[in-house]
Length: 329
Image (cartoon, rainbow, N blue to C red; front, top):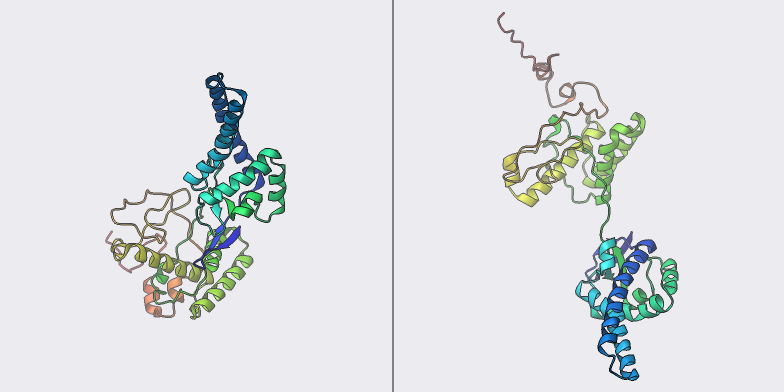
């Protein structure tokens, strides 16, 4: 990954193209250009048979310059850095600041490409790309351009378990502006893989991430809340804020979107709230209860719930609240 800084002091992360993909793109472009050049040459020979030798040589030089040099320059200028070969491989030529190239960039690349690609059969271009840290050939160096990859494989995102219900809305006043994207990514990766980790390793990782998150927010994690549940609740709060920011009050009117299990695509926005008019999610097999490092009744552990209420909210063996009412026989 290569970090470029634009004129507005914005850092861009671009992935430079590797030499094999660039060679394949150049080969595709050369095949297309040579086919066109041969067709134009045959047409000129047939149409200029009555001319003298000097005129025929002049026409052949003009055809060479127009097809083999002017053609690639015109294509890169009009397509903003995408030739046929680069489009097929998924590459693009951009400026050093990440912007689209112009005619002067394509002209310098095409003019120097005649020497380092056509005249030397690509040897100079390959050596320059191997020496350069970002894989640039001499035409890129003099033109101030860079060939980057446009199609980057994206790994499928894992299932992020929801927090316990008794933590919903508890962190609505938390300041999340100082939390970096790297920390959010680390927390999400932990939540998606916590069932695959060893129990002690997962607990230590959750405690470290919870400590880092509490240091960034300026508020310590609540006592009695497992670190994994704390991380899941804060992530859900962040997603809810993103949904409200993107869709306004309409996101809150529809309530939380149903969580999607593995193999199912969640509806709505990434924050877990459906957009207006969204259809209900397709039914799926429910996930097993998420364990965040504790086995006791979460209601009984909550410091803000009295003991008599905790006993009244106990769950019976049949999965229904134990209200004490016995139906008549």
